[in-house]
Length: 421
Image 1 (cartoon, rainbow, N blue to C red):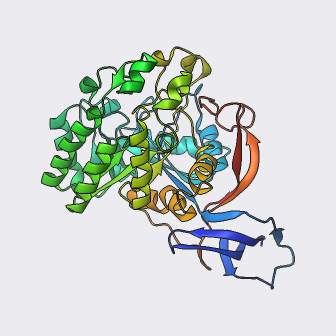
Image 2: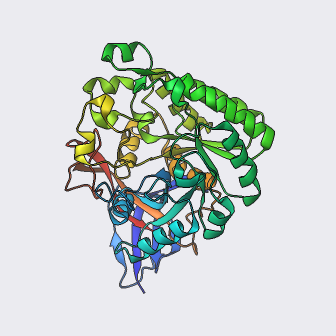
């Protein structure tokens, strides 16, 4: 029997909506006691007594990219899992744009066997199944077979441009009872833009991507959901106008949830003045008004969850001109400390607001339970030191890739340990 006693940790439990200081005893992976002070401690218990530590429900990532299979030079399943654990994530949900794509039961089984053979057992890895064959957006995949194979839901890493196909996918998936995650983006309306359209885009000399490249297809998708009734999760929300549309849709009772990415909360187009290719994202970083609207929307619950959308690339792939760089950045190890400093330490959000958007709300978007931190519950927990400093380097990161604008910088806040069932 192994026991760990965490003395006087700040307990963040968004399930029970509590933020308090307590002692927590964990025995053989189960929460044995949560008390103001635990006096009866097992003789061999490991005692952690460090002021200021935060213990919260395990973090859950809604969608991220794996390099394996197909692009192992970017990221392997083992390094992806190690990065997730280092960032405090107890559940990681992988998008289906691997090579080959996760578009049939054989692909699901192949990934599962690869995960089982990995020397890293944590965290729990869940798989999105592709809505279309090859995740190419042209022909509907056999969704019922994928559901039977155990995918967590259906998603497309890229936006579906074929509205007839999208309609069929919503109709076909409805009885399967699995989440459907979609990204609203119109390739033609975007006009090849690589930053958010506006004055700053002109100053930067980069082609602008207008906000209506997101809001126009979002309006159409909401009309489809209203007519068909299939619940949908809206991925990568990035504009103030999208927030207004989602708020109105939720008020009218549409069965939708929504997420934005952590980088869209932290940064806006002004950061692109550095021309760092790691800031080349899709959707692009918004204008300051977009960023402010997203921050407010997460706090109000209009946007349910924060996604990491971890997207690794090799040094060679990203070390090109900004407009030529493939979109995406890593983030599993960086999101919690940076969001904590920017939004919690600054007083913009309560600690529970951040933890809720990174844990219980992503679980609900996936239709999964997350238990409160209480005796007799299996431990699915993240221990975080909001004051520990560390430098982001290729050696300190667990991810194989280093495509992040914070490379070489010192951060405050680091995950100490996670427990998973």
